[in-house]
Length: 342
Image 1: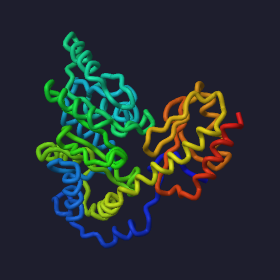
Image 2 (image 1 turned 90 degrees about the vertical axis):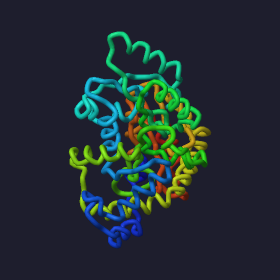
Image 3 (image 1 turned 120 degrees about the vertical axis):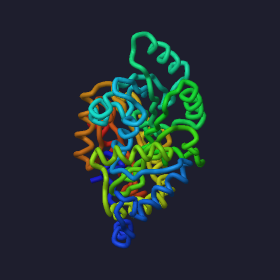
């Protein structure tokens, strides 16, 4: 069975697991775990932030950011199909007591004119807008990369309008490595999260980045949310090795592109609206009807392919380290065959 539901399904390699046995440990609640401290400092330096905080999940990192950047009853502008709004189980409403203001986008990129319109409308009997948040890479667009140019423009806009700017960078390393440059995100946003447990293939953990003051507040919120940990270096050691191997992500882009090119040639099902690939590690099959997307999943499973719905009519394939290069041809054949059965 080939599991292409997500890059969260990866299993840590034995050498990554072994790092946990040899990790130097301390009590992270006292800031005394040297492995955690080193990882936080490394991540902050890599992305040009003052400080980092190791958290259990990207959801926790995102929600801590909203707690700090907003007050109850305020609004957060976000793409209508963003993860922070749609896939975090209503956490923002439950924890921060904020609401989201949808904005249109193209592959995760936002036009400044649309932002300006929303701000103008908010001045007339609408909640105060405090924060803009985007997602990079943008999941619902097929793992698309938000350009450095757009991020710079958004930073200029948020600064001039006294807004906070948070980036949900769960898969930020896909964007950085594919574009072959360091974005210096600390210069362009107030906070950023990224995951160790997705493409980087560590078993647990995410990093939250921001200013010294922001991380000081974030540490308190992490404790309140039950995320304070003790000898957490056993986890951080695995995250560090995964981060040090981050360039392996590019192989997943190659895998996805290889399969995508085969699919374009041989998938003939007219019930498929579009096959989407945005230069990272995902392929989307967009169907005209929800029923056809669900039927496709059944056929895939019969042919030993696990995939998942990203919305009611789109099937997602995510390539990761546990998918071998020598299996790509077989995977493409199984997807093509499954698409021909209905």
